[in-house]
Image 1 (cartoon, rainbow, N blue to C red):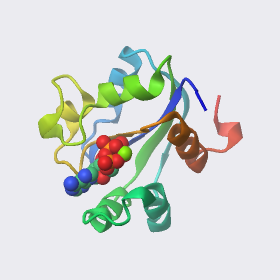
Image 2: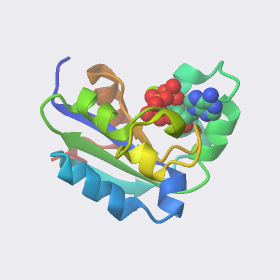
Image 3: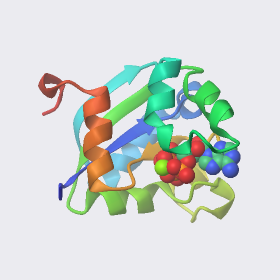
Image 4: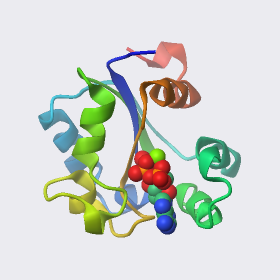
Length: 139
Ligand code: ATP
Ligand code: MG
């Protein structure tokens, strides 16, 4: 389904390193409106389900360990062309490949500890949003 919303999480590394405020400022400056937001910590089961598509990848266990290692900031963002524009704003998965000025270039420290998640399709944005938020928490 076509929407103008995407889902994001500021990952545990960026929360631990004190980058919540700076990342939210970048998101606002890029024209995204925050329509849902919370700080939360995923259980192992949450992280395994959230990244289930990567279950067979060699990095999966480490990824789950990382994602449950501390709190995240989950949010739903609204903007025209939200999914694609947000992927551009966050930059490549590996910060070494990310464009200057992107959130991952600025705040990620490795391909795993890459500061932020962004949905990769409108369908996944909806699934991921409903995974983290109740209807009454979305504005
Ligand atoms: P995300 O889904 O978190 O927005 P992405 O879509 O850029 O990231 P994916 O391929 O979906 O990248 O990988 C999910 C996450 O798994 C990455 O963001 C990163 O934290 C971790 N990851 C991906 N590839 C590797 C790798 N080769 N080694 C270690 N961790 C990895
Ligand atoms: Mg992905």
